[in-house]
Amino acid sequence: MSRKETIESKGKDSLCTKGLTSEEKTFINEIVNMKTIIITNELNQSIRKSLL
Image (cartoon, one colour):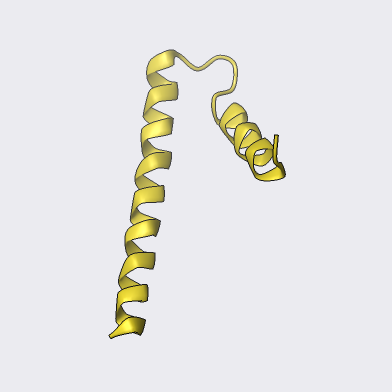
């Protein structure tokens, strides 16, 4: 397992701590995914601007 994968799995484990219901875990994961999508959109826009 690469170092990046290790960090990512630790991050997910810490988000899904014991005591959370599966609904809460899903909710947290959806928020994390939304943030990732927003970041990639912003990166794509800045890349396009620099190319134009």
